[in-house]
Length: 130
Image (cartoon, rainbow, N blue to C red; front, top):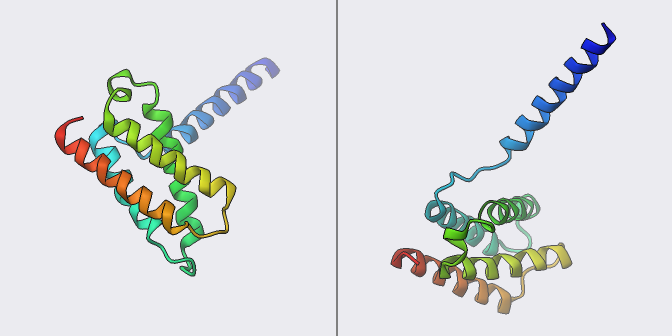
């Protein structure tokens, strides 16, 4: 009886962890659509003023989206060779690096301008199919 209960408990834990792990991913699997959605979301986060009341939760959400995007597409060979992907990764690394190193500081204007430029390049490359 004890053996069956331990197996049942193990099965319940595996199912629970599996379902909890799958629920966090908001990506559809369509690279172009996921990238455009992330670009729009990051633009909103980048443009937030320092005194915005929802700044911290949006930054946390942005970091989670960056991690989800990177983990989903970094090993996809059909995507990693695209110029839109390499530019997107550059922008994501810069933004994630700032949030990790300086979580309480606003984005410097120089970084903000660079990110806007890179996100525009990503959109242009996606429109060309690259």
